[in-house]
Image 1: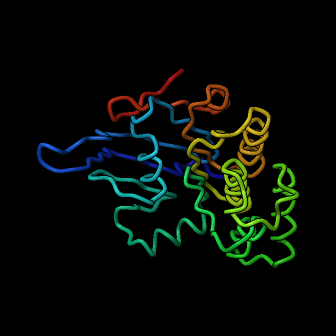
Image 2: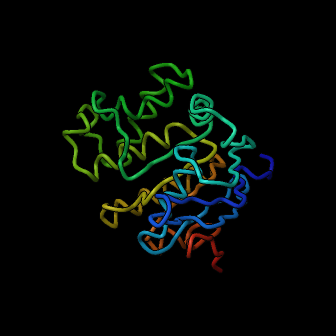
Length: 228
């Protein structure tokens, strides 16, 4: 796969509020991510990591600056075009999970494969295998409301994996999970990275997960600092 940048960020700023109430969250983020890299975004709680991740995924806008995702300038695209880009290339797991409440666990995980045009049997087989690998083999037909928070998190991760995305964003993918399950999730993340060339951008407070990434970037005072 080509080594071009899959993600480019230049002069990105983000503020909320106005006048005396204006609060700067991002003050000039610069970032270049090559295809196949794994990136850990770390920093203190409230430093803006989740805000940055949402902007990188095209789910929020910066106040100024430029974000290019797979060569496409997000600031110049309407929401329909952004959604189409995400559907083709991007997987994401955020803390709200975003599971469809009327679909059971298996159906939620099947969805990306169906959107790609795979047959029902192909998508269902892979979705079932992923859920069983994550310890949810007995929860296939449970609705999200019938699952614990940790179980919902694993369903959301399985759905992202089943999309075989070019780029996967994850906000605290091992948070709220016990160590054994967290390690299993991490193994799946890096297997996706190695075997499919999926680029990973992870927000994490887990030092062990961050240490497995190619690069660790700390968000301080609204800017990214590369850590050795």
